[in-house]
Length: 258
Image (tube, rainbow, N blue to C red; front, side, top):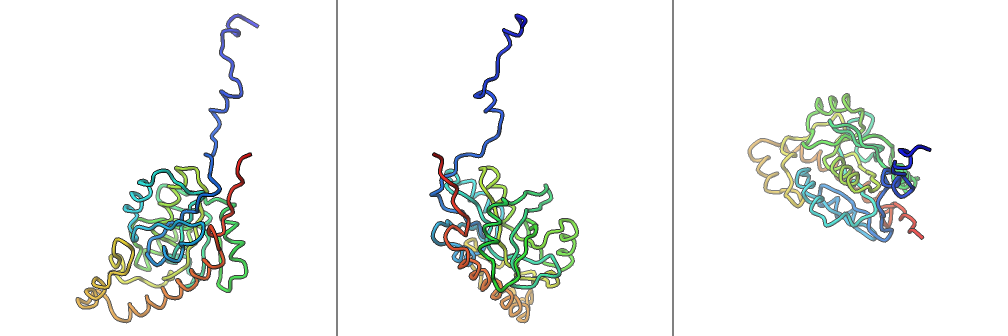
């Protein structure tokens, strides 16, 4: 061995450990964080072992809300709620468990174990349950043609405005991420234009805004009836899924170290 070899610093196990990315310690007693958009979704998600948050269908406000948390204080992140259909074969009430979230910036895969746990918990559900990618968007996709274009670009089965924000938050904190979304408006059905602004910041229906849309001809009563029928079907299935999932949205707590 040459003198230069002796002078060369040796990398022991402790030094090499710093080069290997490790998942941060996850508190098994911490709740699962359910990320929602609508207040009704948030109320359904809440329960034992679950902390539910939402920002009224506003992705920018949701990012601020999540980033303002003092540490994640959760053991997994689940996007939970209803969604718009992109796959023409899906109808209101069908369930999509996300395999990944697709945005213009790329695709972020869901956690396999967390997703499998949700699928297992939903086994035997009378409604159709599929595993597929979800598209994440910052603005509501209302028109049938827009849905078709998004489907062509992403191959996603459904679209929502929270999953991509939730997935990014989970990724920043090294937490497992999963998504459960129930189809509300199918791929061949447009949403009325007023729907993009029909919520309060808390995620409750903006009744005054809806009445104004009807009064000034921006929405038809038939649109409201159809949307109400589809959303009621979706929420009924979402509640059924929540009952099946149980504590912690069905995601088992990680084993504690030692």
